[in-house]
Amino acid sequence: MPKLILKFDERELQELAIGTHPITIGRLPDNNLVIDNPAVSGRHARVYREGDHYVLEDLKSTNGTFVNDKPIARHTLLEGDVILVAKHTLVFTRQEGEPDAADHEAPAVRAGSAPLKPTSLLAGLDQGRPSQVYDAVVPKTAIPTAQGRIGTVKVISGKSSQPEFVLAAVTTMIGKADNAQIKLYGWFKPDVAAAIARKGEGFSITPMGGKLSINGEQVTGRREMANGDVIDVSGLTLKFSLS
Image 1 (cartoon, helix red, strand yellow):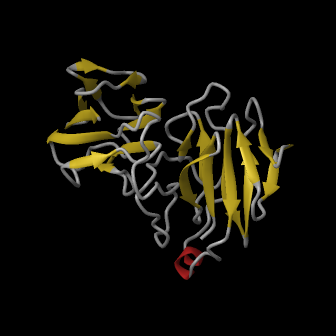
Image 2: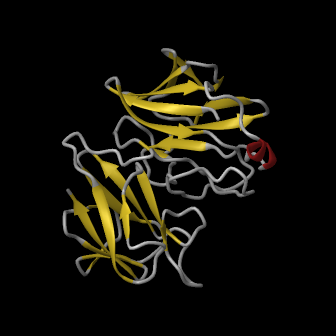
């Protein structure tokens, strides 16, 4: 399956497989790939499948998207193309071959055919499920910060899919949507209640449609997370650790 390899300062940070649904790139936490840099637009660019090819499209970003040092508005990706978004580079490769049969069966989502829905960077790509949710994958292991620290959240109360979660993705979504990494259960729970994003040496959390509080204080906008914070998201209580 084709993939993008994210690099920064020549360090390989992670790989993103490209399936039938677009991968969105930008500064906002509802993108598949979040780059928390002022030079990156909220929704900067996206990569999507078009027939047998994969296309990179700039989403009218402020500072532009570049391929092989040339600014682009829309570009059909070729093996080894180097995409530049601010100071981050993404290398496109199809070295592992064509998409598998299940990937061909799932309908592609084209620009304008469906509203954006936020998603987590999942631990695997659901290739066969027809969906209008934008899917992507995360590294097999968590990406530590520059100081080698790993973020986790432990379920204190409420129901979720497992008792503890490693924050392996650049962005982790909390909600009842099928592809939310941290699941909420309940008829009236939001599809996406909040998003946890890596930010430099730490993590931040942003409410996305659910009630959010940290240490008993209501949160209405983006909030930096501190080691030991107790987070309540639409009835699910989590304890954040950075170690």
